[in-house]
Image (cartoon, rainbow, N blue to C red):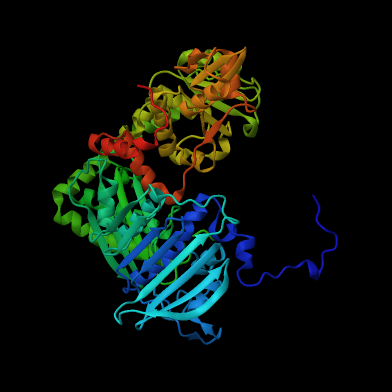
Length: 639
C-alpha cells in the first residue's frame, strides 16, 4: 500500500505540546490496554517515590474514586510553584504540560529517580480526560486544572493549610477516547504498590477502593525493606536457614542493596531493580551479583574442604538452585539498553555489586559456618543432579522428534513443515486422542497425548524432569530444548494448545503443564505461543439443532432463549465423551473454536512465581489462603 507521491515539507507534521502523546500513546506507555491504563497510576506514584528516595516523603495514598478516577497524594515537598525562568511559567505548569521537564534532568532536585524517562506527569495529563493537581506549600494550597493535556484553569491559590503541611495531590480520569478500557483493578494496583513499598524501606503506601460494592483498603509498610520482600516470596517454601542474608553498601556513588535466602525448591528466583524500576532482563548489576556469588562460594568450599581437590568448581547455577534474591541499586544517572529500561548497562554497577556482595557474603559465611555448610551441600547435590540431567538431556537430543520412531508420547504429527501455520494439541489420555486425531486438520494440526498426571516440576530436580516420559515428549515435540539449551527459532509449532477436560482434574493437568512451560520455556509464553482450548460444558439439542454452552451462565441464557421444554441436554464430563464432529467443531476448528492465549507481564514475575509456588509447592497453609481469597473468581466447579 503506497502513500501519497506528493511528499514535501507540507507532509511533515509538527505536533505541538502534548499532541504527540495523544497521537501515539503507545510510544509513551507501551499500550492502551489495561496494562497502559494502570501504568498511568505507576507514573504518578513513581514521582512521589522519588520524593521518598530523596528523603522527603514518608507516606503515599492511592485512591480509586467512586467514578473510577484516581487520586494520588503524598507528603513530599510539593511540586515547586514559583516561576521557572526558562519557560516563564510556574514550575507546576511546566511539569504537567512539557515533555522531559522535571527535577530528574540535571540540577539538584533528585539524586536518583525512577519513572518513565522523566515524562510521567505530562504523559498522564495528556492521556487523561480531566486532571487537577494540588500542591500544599508554605501554608497555601495551589491548584491547576487540565483537560486532555490543555490547561483549563491556571495555577491559583484555592485555600490555606497548616504551615507544616506539605505535599502533592494529583487527581485524574483516564480518557476513554484513548484507552480500550477504563476500569481499574484493585488487585493489579495492590501487587505493584506492595512491591514498591518493599523496595523503599520505611515508606508507607495506602491503597483504597471507594467504588460501590468494592470498598476495600490495604496499607503496605516494610521497615525490613527487601529482606521482608525475600521472606514474602519464600513464604510458600521451606527456607534452608532462618536468616535472610543482607548486603548493603555504596561504591562509586552507586548504592547497593542485596537480600537472599535459599529454600528447598530447585529453581532460582532473582529479581533486579534500578531506582525501584524492575529490570526483568537483568544487566550489569545481576552480572556483578552472580560473579560474586560463584567466586565466594567456591573459595569458601575449597578453603573448608567441602569440595574435594578432584571435584570441579560449583557452577553459578548449582549455587543459585533454590535461591530467592533481590538486587536493588540506586544510581544517579543509570544507562539502560534500549528504551524500555529492561536491562541495565551501567558498567560501574557490576563492579559495585560484585565488590559489596563479595566482601559481605564472605564475612557472613565465616561467621555462620553451619549455614555455609547447608548452602554448600545443597549446591554440591545440585551439581551431581545436573551431571545426571546432562546425560538424560543428551539422550533426549539423540532421540529427536523428527526421527519419528520411539517418540515419547506417541506424537501424531501434521504434514506441514511451516511452523507458522502449524499447531499442536496437548491432550490428556487415550480417550481424547481418538476424536482429536480424527477431527484435526491433517496438514496443520498435530496431537500429542499425555498419559496420567504430568510431573510437578515445582518439586523436582532437573534429572527427574529429563527422566519423565511425558515431559520428554513435550520437549522433543516442541523442538526448542529447555533452560540454557532453549532456542525459539527451533519451535516446530507456533500454537501450542493445552486441551484438557473442562473439570477440576483437567484444570489441574493444565496447571501442571503451564508450571513446566513457565519454569523451563518461559519465552513461549512471552511470545504468545501458548493457548488453552475451551471445550464446551453442555450440548443442548432442540428441534434437531445443537447449541453448545461453555459456562453455566451461557447454558442458562440459551435455555431462556430457546425454552427449556423439549430440550435434550448432555453434560460433557470429558473430551473423550465427544464424538469427532463435536470436538472438531467446538474445540479444534479455527473457524468455530475459542482459544485463550496465555500471557505474562514481566512486571508481575515475582507475583507469578509466588502464585505457582503457592499452588504447586509443599506448603498447605498458603495454598488454603490463596483458595479462600480467590474462590470468588471461579466461574464453574465440578463437585
